[in-house]
Length: 336
Image (cartoon, rainbow, N blue to C red):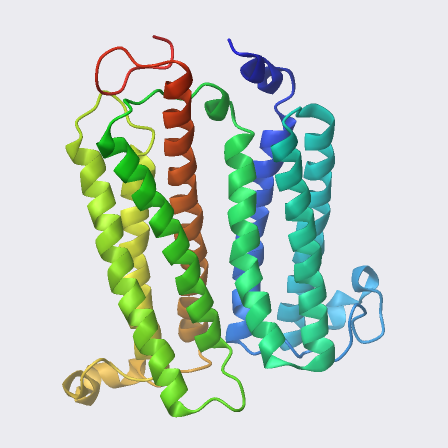
């Protein structure tokens, strides 16, 4: 057993905290998505207080409507922030890898910046700050997923892979998918937070770019998943995440189409004229529309996190193979 694996056996809590933080961040992304979709971001005009109350002592039982949504978002943000700080302290005390400590500190910096951005968005009532706030959220989620990956025992005892061009291409493709996923989320944040000076042409251009990126992502993820299946190795650490990523992308395309349908109209004028479809169009503000748009946003972050996890696993397996070369070609178990 390696020294790193022994470290994880002695204290598994950093990884457990990181996994807890990943789950909590997903819940926070859902809450944040609902705040934007339901336009609840300005339910309170003050920050860090809520109607003059301390955030933690605000009489929640008096809240109704938008204030329930926004205050829930604030409380969940505070919980995620505290969990991030605890995780950073745990890593500093138990993990000797300097770069992991720096990554944990970066997560703390991001969550603090995100909280300040959210507060300043309220105080200034600025759409630009809301847009930046929406871009930082998935970035923080990606860092948290990275922390969960590098604090796991799998990272200490990775499966070795052959150092061939196929594995390198898979790794580079996973990196490209990760970068493109984040760019897609940035474009999506622009579409969700349309500024007061935005024109119809600007919105149309961003939408077209969003659709082109979606098509490119779908092709890349499909190529990646089928490439993993076609390698026919003994074991590939990217197999199930790759299939899960393809499933997420197909779901994302469906949610995107459904989002457009509920908010505007069915694609094509013929479907919109049918009587049984008329009740499902132009329903902006309805529960179905809010849930679908929020799911679309959160699923985009899950695509980012999964693609990053794939890239990290492939990188770790390949770097491990350089230190301890495989016997022959293909994948071999870590114990061999």
